[in-house]
Length: 204
Image (tube, rainbow, N blue to C red):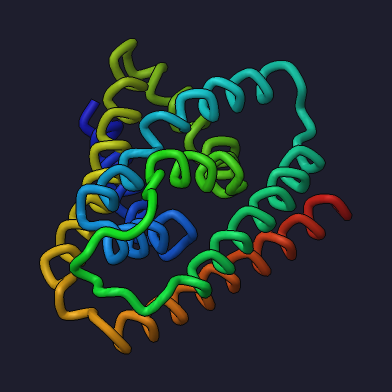
């Protein structure tokens, strides 16, 4: 049981702090709308990963090949992240201490997570085998692994949102606009990476 807890906590922490579209969105929404919206983005995997896990377990047991599915998912994810990059680039030079526009943070976070192939790939290659192995150690094993994985995953992103939110007022005026441009470039880079992943999976 202890091995399931440790595996879940360590993998969740690594996934939570690894740079990616979702972590970038946590920072972006926190700067634009406050730490509360960053926390909403951080919590998105709790909602979206349930169908991901169930689908992966079903696919591994019944279907087999999944390359085309991941390729299409990467293509859709790249388009959505590229649109977010454009939206971020167009953000006006507003005061970072003031909420602007409609946040829709949970919806944006859920879409990014569902259309990002990496959560799917993680559960196909790492998560599902560890769940099956934990099940051999006892019925509670898979629940401990999944539970501590998401405590670490979401908790680390929440910590990032709260930390950024604490220093949010330092980013105002020109500094805020420059930071939005940097985040837009980062999102565009992730979009290009997803397009490359789509080509790799579809060609395979």
